[in-house]
Image 1 (tube, rainbow, N blue to C red):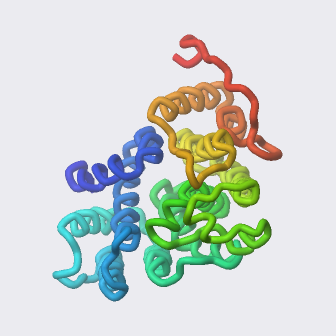
Image 2 (spheres, rainbow, N blue to C red):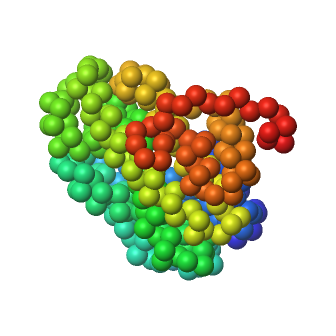
Length: 324
């Protein structure tokens, strides 16, 4: 890839993936530009099915199949892809060849996007995890191909956990948006049923202690995945570890925000301000430089504690000489 070829992908990443973009900027150049290419590929496929007023199902499927063909080096139909799609796929295809990305990972990712067309509810967490094999684990596996860690097999299960944790954080944060704009519920029905929460409650934003219990349960599940995920950062190349650690700290901070809202993701805003993101960059860097241990730095800097529910410990006031 060249800097010019990745320009469109970088612009997509900067515009649509603000939290992840902050961490991506801290990757070494050999991985950073590849990450722009990966993210843009994921985004153009996701955008096919994530529209409040999407085209008909067949049109969405044709678009996804054209993206699949272009990503795998086949010739897609000439009248299906946009100019942006073509630019992104050309860059991604170069990356896939250079990084030896497994074509199966492309397939399972596109299959998961296609699943969003006609599958919008999940009875159990295991069923949801099957969906995330494509929508999250495949993303983590492609990132591993780009980073090319010396202990790739040891890193893989941790990468899956971290990718799933990021996605579950998004699912919990975006419950109201998902059901109201896309008619999708990514909270397992078994969890909703456990606390007697109905879809109409979610759709109308009817917050209650039972809804809070659902959100709390899913946060605890997600935080277990963060713990397993960050335990594998040590397997990554040393020049990639801080950026991945920072991604985990940033995504996990949505949990702090959700708790401050008393779990009201139906009416509250759990997004992070730019000021907050920058503060977390400084805080994470301080603990990383002090320990050089990704797990220790994560538990010191993040909203998640090492052995239980999210930490409520106060944040230290770092002096400039601590971090410069």
